[in-house]
Length: 196
Image 1 (spheres, helix red, strand yellow):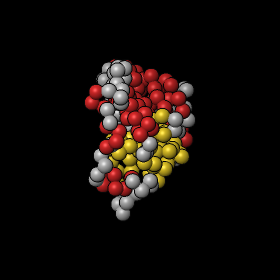
Image 2: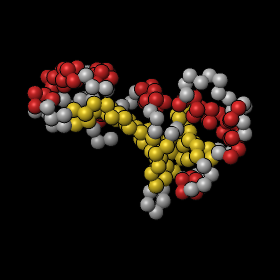
Image 3: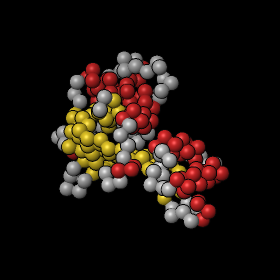
Image 4: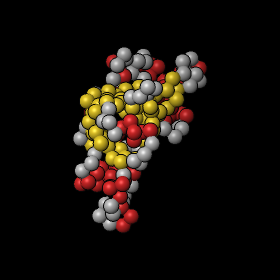
């Protein structure tokens, strides 16, 4: 990563982020690389995903290629009105890039585990969900399931680490005054990632 001040090495935070963010983008090699946004879950240095047994994604992934996967979440947009009208606009955000080997999962028990993890990520209060009952019985047989064995992972946390202390303090105040949807969360992350 070019900007080491934005490099995040906190694996606990990265894992937490990957388990909360709803979508990522899978990039698959092809004559023109194919990028597809999709739902996923992360567990034990693996990205799990599923889909139909048809289409371009399926045709490319069934050959177990090397792939990359990225996720990003914008937090606060920092406008030109901040810093008393002198701010060069920017975006505070967190992102992660993972690279690794894609593997098609054929084992039915592993497929059930992965499909269960996917549903539980998006339905954390659904404690009754089981691949052994209701609408889920046998669905693992007709579903394309795969995993990325993560070989490299990098994360970028941009929350004002490059600012002078007085600028950082003023942006904190500007965010407190603005009170938009993600401003309070942005302030928490500024405090987590920046030591001024």
